[in-house]
Image (tube, rainbow, N blue to C red; front, side):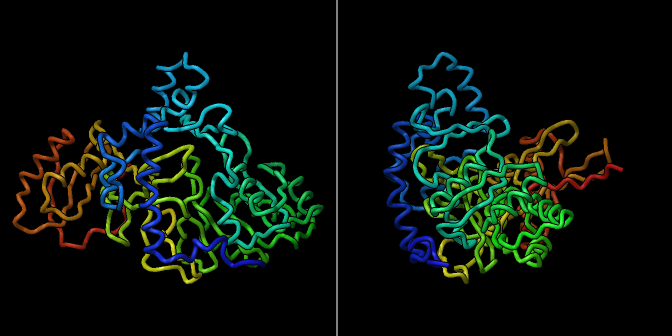
Amino acid sequence: MGALFYDARETSPVDERERDLFARLPGFVHAACERAPAVARQLQGIDPAGLVDRAALARVPVLRKSELLQIQHAARIAREGATLDAERLRVFGGFATVGWGAARRVYASPGPIYEPEGTRPDYWGFARALHAVGVRPGMLVHNCFSYHFTPAGGMMESAAHALGCTVFPGGVGQTEQQVRAMADLAPHAYTGTPSFLRIILEKADEMGVALPSLQRALFSGEAYPPSLQAWFKDRGIQGFQAYGSADLGMVAFETSAREGLVVNEDLILEIVRPGTGRPVPEGEIGELVVTTLNADYPLLRFGTGDLSALMPGASPCGRTNLRIRGWLGRADQTTKVRGMFVHPEQIAHVLERHAEIGRARLVVSGETGHDVMTLQVEADAALDTEAVAATVREQTKLRAVIEIVAAGSLPNDGKVIEDARRYD
């Protein structure tokens, strides 16, 4: 099987990795500000030289996906006559440092949000995940991610090439032809969604075709529950999952330990309270925020909108980087109440005003047309609930009941707003 680890960094001491990341960050950000004006605006006067630890980084405003979409859209409208040299400003909203020619490809995610692909090998960082699955040089990878518009197909192909593998670009659909190609070519590994591989294998059963060569799979883009993991294991396939995005590339990946997902190298991962940029304690569920040291597309404190939580300690597999529990839902819990949108950010502003409150959750209950807002707060009984209610009304333009609950009684599920209304 070859080396167990992709490189020595996977097992480097935790403090050594942290020192290295924050030794590189100031120079990286300084260079990004010179070529990516949107990054300079995001810093809002923060000196890159001072970004030497997580506390300093936490002062940088979080850039959320919805903001990136708006910035890109506004830039395209404002710069329709941009020169070729300024395409990185017009198309990517000033976040990319590369334009046409320097970027190998450009992709479109729903919105649309456009993402550049640079020229370095394994640009998206998935080779590390494929290696953890057991893919080694000289293998054939059957890639069933789409090659159109979004980078998923290219992500896996570039990773396989970086490992010295050959790729069959199967893409999506045409199930019978996928079965025939697998039977003829005998691939060692599959990349794609778990649901599509199950469809292929069930079609192979219908056709009476055996696919014994396929023993490894790297899944992404969908949930991969234990029941599905067991289903593939019964078929002789060890399937693992990786989490990533078109903005960030590969963020974290599953290993043989099957205890959470190990964070990729060359990025700084934080878990913050939804609606804020404030990191939460280890183990608490919050929004996953990533700073990636990608010189072509430098994203600082990019809010993915996904919920996760940090896990304590190192993985039993020997990799020492941070671990997350995987995808635990969406952080955007915006809810419409009595015709008004209520956002997690507004609840965060309430907590900033009333520091004596610990955690809080806004519960929207009642029946359609008769909404009731209750702000549950972990606080001392002496809390001035009328003052808190006034702040809620100031922030949301809506009245709310303030309910004091015991410290630690609110669920650790990352929810800031819970819609408990009845719609029947």
